[in-house]
Amino acid sequence: MTPWERMQICRHPERPRSSHFIEKITDSFTELHGDRLFGDDPAIIGGLGYIGGRRFIIIAQEKGNDTESRIKRNFGMCHPEGYRKALRLMEMAEKFSIPVVCLIDTPGAYCGLAAEERGQGAAIATNLMKMSQLKTPIICTLIGEGASVGALGIGVGDVFGMLEHAYYSVISPEGCAMILFKDAKQHEKVTEVLKVQSEYLKEVGVVDEIIPEPEGGAHLNPFFVYQGVREFVLRQEALLRSVPLDQLLQNRYDRFRRLGVVEEITSYEKELSESHI
Image: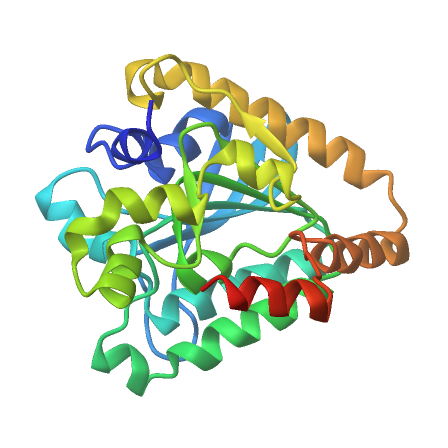
């Protein structure tokens, strides 16, 4: 399949959402609401859950399943109070030494006027800073769309898993096509250039593990991916639990310092390249 065809699998309307994963991989789950500053953002589901008898704080971006729920959840585009709710739950996890599981699935943070008025940028930046220093294990799992800083707002952790047909990108293909070509119809070409698929991201170190999907996508056999995510979370929690706290934080820092690949060229190579333009 082409990268754009795989993008359509990731965006399939019947693809399992975070609420489905929480229901199927947890033994029990108690949802907690509100950021204690403004209100509750339905685009973020968070609370205390048990998986395989182990306690976790679960924070998930929820896009909704039908028209009514998608409008309620704002299509998974979080407001500042959503990120602040996530931060409140992370701080609770740190206080009681409970590992955190983040389920990422968003086309991006909400960029409307109301979100900006309530401090969208500051809310996400605070999360990035706090998650980088949080004194408890953080397991991130990308189950669908992971676009822009909206995904990164709950995406800093010790280990990062990704479903096979999910995508992770600094911007959506349509948004990138509008910026580069002034034409959203160039999205197929842009998708290939952005390298948003799991295999490439694992190659450059952004993703630690690819969680397989059934042929044709997760929506054709949801229980297969539920089991894969559950096993990934429990396996990683067992590994992280044995790491001393100081080493855990240092490893988290080092992981982000190693992301990506940098290629340097000499001044001669640069001059040679420019002479052929």
